[in-house]
Amino acid sequence: MTRTDLRQGFLNGMSLAAASVSIVTTDGPAGRNGVTVSAMTPVSADGDAPTLLVCLNALAPTLPTLLENGCFCVNVLTTDQAQISDVFSGRTPAPGGDKFNIGAFSMAATGAPRFDAALVSFDCRLVSAEKIGTHHICIGAVEDVAVAADGTPLLYGLRSYLRAEKH
Image 1 (tube, rainbow, N blue to C red):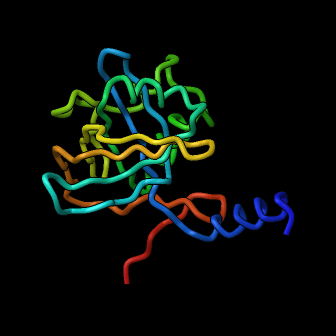
Image 2: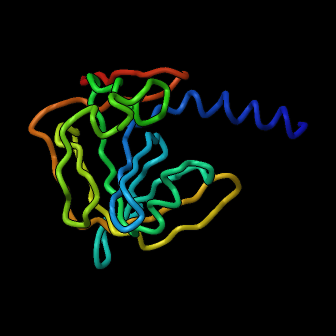
Image 3: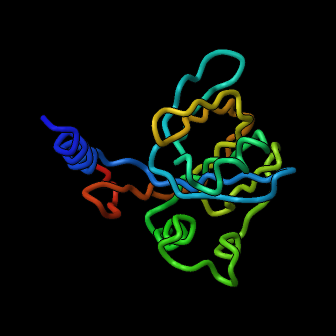
């Protein structure tokens, strides 16, 4: 298999692996920023604190801000929040030129912006970041969790937004 065929096969295969959609936000000495991700997963619930990881493109303007601030909040979106995902991904223009105008945010314990209407928000201190290829794997120690009373996660797969079905 050629490198091009392998890449295309990987992209096609990954399009079949649905994932929750989150916005990763940060604030601190380097400023406020945020980006949409589907690459978020738990690492462990054990140890001194639970941990999770997010993968950010090395070219994303949010990455250097997050690395310098040393904190981030993973805000899992609900099925009715695709517009927020589109704004934070840059697919649609930010209202008034600021992504954070799309909704209400409050300051989490680390100082990172928490999206008030998120299905769940994980407030994290950055404990590790490593560049692998074109992305950085950022691991955070979870300092606080805010869970909404109700909602269904927004998913991304088959190159589009999907809805989870409860059985």
